[in-house]
Image (cartoon, rainbow, N blue to C red):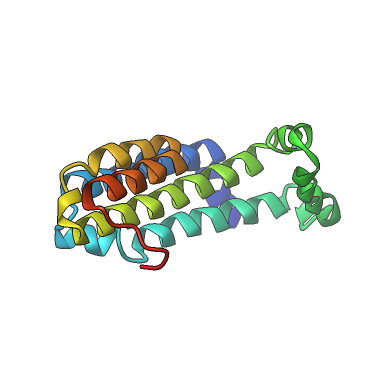
Length: 164
């Protein structure tokens, strides 16, 4: 049965599902940040859990290749070579599994940052109407969106604490 699941959920299908799948969550953050559905679907464990399951599945597929369960496991742990430099990272990202793992990681973290931004803007009423700009930046550029939001938070709400 697992082979049929693997045949059905190809890496390309998972990539498309993850890309398209996060869009409704982002639309909820931008258009309906105070809606209870947004709180349940985006600001809870729901969205990260779905992306985490996809992540786990791709990692499982990576280690469970056609050569057998955990074949060449020691070779696969050479993934840590990414710390050697950009050329090593480029080589590692040449593997579709690893590239998809990194992409799902990126989507998950950006969505969590977007959720935090929307929640924080809701607490700071002055930021509710301008939060769309940093959310769009966060969707596409992650940390830049967070930086834009923090700058707006300082300028508009005049509030930035070390701990919140």
